[in-house]
Length: 487
Image 1 (cartoon, rainbow, N blue to C red):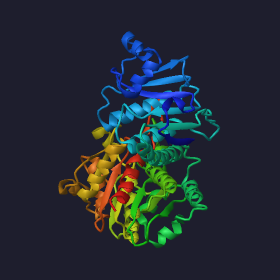
Image 2 (cartoon, rainbow, N blue to C red):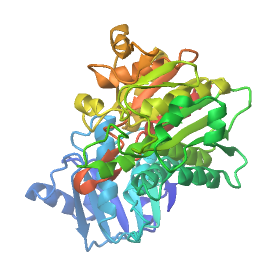
Image 3 (tube, one colour):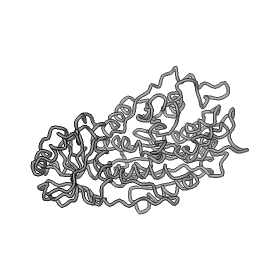
Image 4 (cartoon, rainbow, N blue to C red):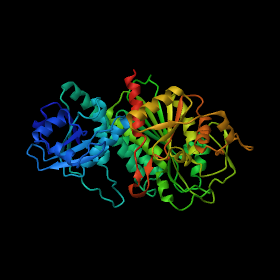
């Protein structure tokens, strides 16, 4: 799909469709187009067929002008980044409900930051175009070929071009994460993820991939990670993707993504109802793949390491049992009270492994606890951190990208709940499961600035819309991009 920006005369741009943002009061471009249409938009508003409320859409056809159709996009009430993003997403969805091949978005009527607005339009268009493919499912072909961002000023147009490139890359990264998350677990295994990581690096000068086998992890004494894969015939992999976009003296951002390609709960077996959705328990790792894909497209001048511990959690005669004690790579021992609290067991060894890269910051991303859904629902990711500045930067990136998080505390009172009589710690605590899980991880991250994103509520949707969302790729990319802007 092609994106471009233009400041030419709007009615001289070759396109079959126009997305026109307006509220109930017509101004600027909307007013000018209404005059060309002899008051057709005014008539729609007067008759009540279009109210102009944020995210409302209405299609005008059979026009006596260059465009075959105009898609009106309501803006009244779109007063925050989140509401503007929702409106743009509604507009992008409306485009794909028409046979549009070439579409122009008129820039005025929503945000004044053309780089940001253009990035959201490109991202929303790319993600709206996604259809799952594979396992016998063939996606419907999309007719849309070209999207043009129009604004009156040439300088705004130049800013928009950069925004389109960035937003398109983020959208592709989200779709990469969605596709991996949506694949069934008999296809998307730890070995499949390792192969995908190798393919991603093929022919790339600034990305290399290495994969540690179970034997190599055994040599590194990753007893905690390997305790999770013990009951599965699928071998575990520790996938390491190294994006080098800056001088080697620049410390990297390290992303650690949980990838349990299927989680039965192990011996602490989950209920059967809804267990099919446990193929999504690798969405943290999938988001790391999405970021790496976006970095290759944007070529951001940063260094980023992506670490993906990939395992399958299955019950078997040799599986880890409740009450077993395992030794992590850090040397700390863990009493496994519940084998369904396995994500933290693979993350802790990966977080210890991250130390060798002398990171600037480390962010782990995991579908870790059902408790976060009880606290924040399906709208917001949970954020916990040992560094206030890092937490604030991630929260800001979430707000700007519309991929929001909410910070929870890491207090000593919660940490005491994972005390064990038989090991240095237990893998579950009492109340506040999201926080005690992060307290567990915090014990392995004392040597660097670290943040934890619990995306159990935001990584996928259930019901009729069942599928991976691609979050938190937008937030992570906004954070990483900020590292380049601040230099």
